[in-house]
Image 1 (cartoon, rainbow, N blue to C red):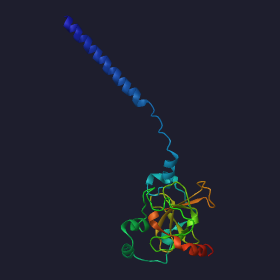
Image 2: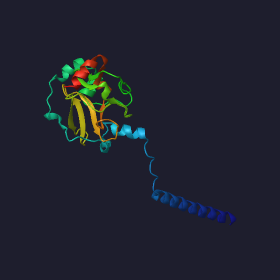
Image 3: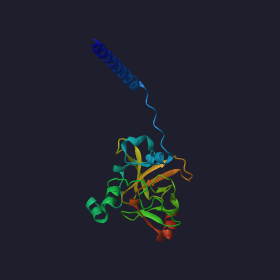
Image 4: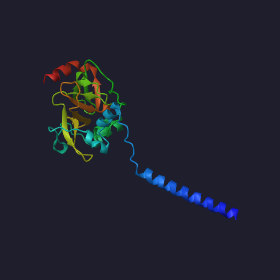
Length: 215
């Protein structure tokens, strides 16, 4: 008799415990999750700069002066096979296929010089003076302006959003994207976010840079 009563008590306790656990789980399911911590300043800068991730569309700005790339023509009309003969695979991926190098890894991210010219790595056309470069902290070389007529802007809808791509005006090689109104203390408040692999610095072009800037 005592054994039966003990068994009944155990069953009752087990049933009550099971109902308590189920109730606790139900309450926990309806509790709101805490908000995620805000990203750091560096994280926000990198996210705003990266041009190859689809869900980051809200971070990109565009310019009304941009045109559609299919409406552009370029003096250097080499075919893909001709470009492959003069570019290494990574250069081809970025310059001719609109690729992007990883942030903080490029040769010119932290490169600064008092004089010289950054040229297109594909066709060698001059693009930026050394004095156009500034520290933005975005992980890619940043320029507030280009040499006159050296860079063209085009509407880039490749990721289902409208952005402003910048390309070499001579060969159409992909350089990166341009962002405006970020508050940088520069004359234009623009940031040309350029892949290091798309350009090549030539320090001996100081005289050429001065000549091009007056053109």
